Every structure is written in C-alpha cells, then in structure tokens.
Image (cartoon, rainbow, N blue to C red; front, side):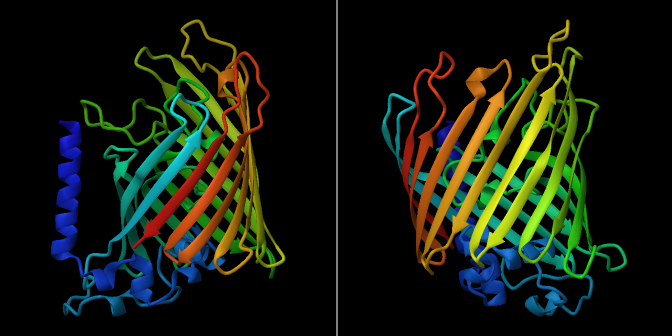
Length: 400
C-alpha cells in the first residue's frame, strides 16, 4: 500500500506540472528567469562558483534588481506573481559496484528525483524548497524549505533564513557536492541522540562586513530544534524536548580564499528525562589556486557527555571527523574531484571510517553529466572493521 500511495503521489505531481506550469518559462528556475546559462553560477552542476554563492546569499536575486520586472502586471503593489509556477527537476541514476554487501552490483535508477522551486515574494524576500518524490525507492518528502530575508535591516548586509535546512551548509553544502560519496562525519550518528550535522528546523542570522579593503568577515548565529526534520508528535510539537541548540561560524574571506571556525552546542533529553550534552567545533578552509584549482576542507572535534542516555551517567565520548576536497575543472567539459573523509569515535570503533574518493565528471550538456567514481577504504582491518569496503559508481545526473 505504501508503494502504491507513493506512485500515486508522483503521478499527481506530474499531472500538476503538466496542467499548470509553463515549462518554457519556468525550468530550470533561475536560468530561465534570468536568461543565463548554468555556467554563470556553477563550476559544474550542482557545485556553485563565487558568483553563485553571491546570488544565493542575496536571496536568489540579482543585486539591486527589481524583481517586479519578472512578474505579472496585476495593478497591485502588494502582490507579486510570476507568469508561471517556478519549478525544476533533478534526477540521479547510478550503476554501482560495492564490496560491503552480498550484492556486489546494483542498478540504482532512479536513485533520486527531486522537484525544486524558488521565487521572490518581493524585493529581498524569497522562498526556496525541494520535494524528494523518490529517494532510494521511497517518497521522502520535503527536505530544504525556507524563507530568506536579504538585507532586512536598514539596508545592512544582514540576512535571515527561517525554516528547515542543513546546519552544516555554512561549512560545505552536501547537496552541492560533485561526488556520490557523502561527507561522512556530517551524517555519522556519534551518540544515541537524534542530532546530526544535517537537516533541522532552524533560524539562521548572518552578517557580512568589510574588515579591510580586501578582507571581509562573515558572522553566522543560529538556533535549532536539534532533532532533525521528522514528524510532529501527538501534541503537534516538532521538537522532542524543551531545549534548543545553537550553532554559528565566524570566517574571513578575500576574493580567492576563505577560512573560518564553526561551533555547535546542543542538549537532548529523552522520554525518561535523561539528557546528553554535546558540542562540535573546528576550522574550515576554502582556497582557490591558479584561478580554478579549489582546495577545501573542514575538521571537527566533538564530545557527548552521556551518549547512551544512561541513568547512571556514562563516560563521555570524544569524536573527530573531517574532510578535504579538491575540485579541478581541467577543461570546459571535464571536472576532477578528489575527496578524503575520516571519522574517529572513541568507544564506538564501528563508526570509524577513512576513505579516499576520485570522481571524474563529463558534462555532455550544462545540465546533464556523466560521472565515474571510485572510493577506496583506507582503514586498516581490525575486529571492528573485518574487511575493507570499496565502491565504484557510474552515474547520470540530469537537471531540467
């Protein structure tokens, strides 16, 4: 029944698109709205470049533009509607070889399909969301969904994002990575808490200003529920306890380089009123050499003081995790991506990981890429890691 309901929902979505959306005007959302190629904002789909970062940081609007030029003339200054509902679609399809399960080869097509939408409400206010109507064979639902207020206080570069999104996006957005391989520490459940460095419901405030003529500073402060984006409980509460979590980042940036420090502090209490306090903290960097060689990375140190929610208390768990990546577009159509991941968790050795990934992506079109990827397991064999697990992927990624 669940599969039938999921397919029925997908069918309704496509009926909706076909009946009310002007495809020529609406898809892809930003490229068609501004009559710009994808390469203006992207190093290669989906990774964005510096202009793309500025565009996203401006609430998905071009600087100083009047968004009403894209709307219908309704003779009402208090209402802005675009000529068509702005929608785009992304689909990922893979052929995967792996050594960590009894099934060593698998056709994973489609691996995911998502429906994206974003539009201005007025100047400096926009919405953004995407709906995963299939991910690994099931209907996932809405993940990113937020309202963005740009320069909302007296024209200062002070922005507010409110809704649900990933708390690690201010480090490196997982949705923009070029590799199939994920950022391992961000998705590792170090303790029994519901917290991860991924999706949450939050309010995020950011402020940017110049330190010198060539150096700028960014300060981000945020508050989050701390338990992900699951369903509301019987009392219609999304948060599972009275506590709120806090995170933020301070960074310095020039035209080519960025360095920063990230911090997250949280507390979670379970149904037996036992709590776990935890934090994550560490530096990140994003450097550009020779105009197009991008080297980036992040290291985080964390502690959980009662990871198993024991009544008697438990020795705290320390964890360390990080990633280092390199992106090099060595021709107009080809991009090389390297990614190193490491995770070390005291007392929970089964969570430890160390991998190295090589990905080569060929862009047949700006919105259609073919990729080949190999991930090698670099962790030594041990009782907690009895065999190495290597992976290989051939993939197709399409956005329209």
